[in-house]
Image (cartoon, rainbow over all chains, first blue to last red; front, top):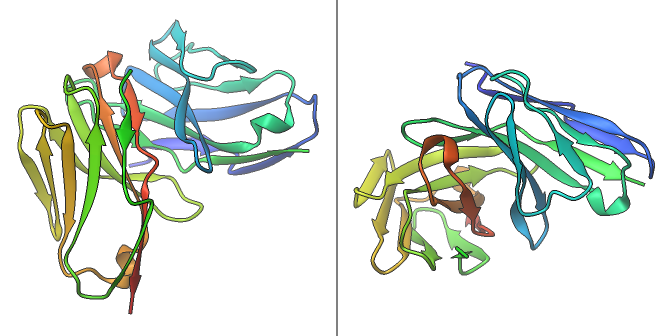
Length: 112
Length: 114
């Protein structure tokens, strides 16, 4: 059971660089989401998707883009990284019936 | 707007003690509540999920209760062990399935002393 897989686990970017954080799930969940976790702030929702081709903004969407071309994959793009985007990023998928959430192991991103 | 509070932010107990972690939420119109464990540098592991129609769930030494009307949940850990040291987060879901939105507390960092 792979569950939710995130890559990479660690990344260092220079200000202004772009990158894509990958997230894949093998549970056939329609709902997927991205969170960032910062000290003292808890987990905050960045973007979410309720199915292929459907995405929407969460609490802190600025500076991030998402797309959902398949049920399995939900990548998060940083177009021009800023130091304020230094954080730990978590991808989650939610079971349709129980609404139980499953999380990936996270990507620790540092922007210098 | 739903707000989830976990107090205290940190807790240290001796091994073997039974303990209770608290979680409170402001809007009682929830679909479910989930407790997670997070080890340092790791992801979130689901411990227990309580649907809004349920009062409690049990898994091994863990028991979670839910009182929707008062906006509270507790996670009871029996006979604590050093391996239980981690951060425990609760999250409430305000909708169902594909439209679920999770609101998290900031977590309680538990340290169990040998």
